[in-house]
Image (cartoon, rainbow, N blue to C red; front, side, top):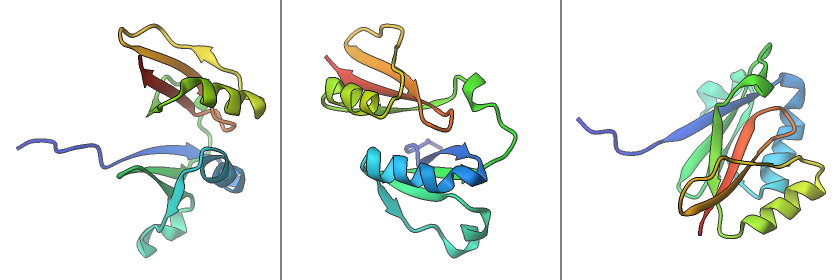
Amino acid sequence: MTIKRIHHVQITVAAQDVAAARKFYIEDLGLTETTKPQSLLARGGFWVEVADQQLHIGVEEGVDRAATKAHVAYEVDNLSVWRRKLSARGIEMLDGIPIPGYERFECRDPFGNRIEFIAKL
């Protein structure tokens, strides 16, 4: 028995933030929305594709997202482009602890979820 790969990662937003999250992840980050199965539509949220994997944005109330270290790390080609793009949206960037062979930064999405952008040197 072997784990083959990560199928998807799920983050959450409050119910009132779903439309804003859809704008951030689809318009601002440029991810493509994918269809959720009919059986899960009533749970709210939406799914997007990241290359051949999925990010599920679910609905969850009463969570202190700003207190968690849990996060999604996006590997990108040009870190400075992402720094500028997110900075223009007013998102504060934090330098991550150095990892040999990589450059990276962290931030919080507008809903408190921690995200990381990482690029090979």
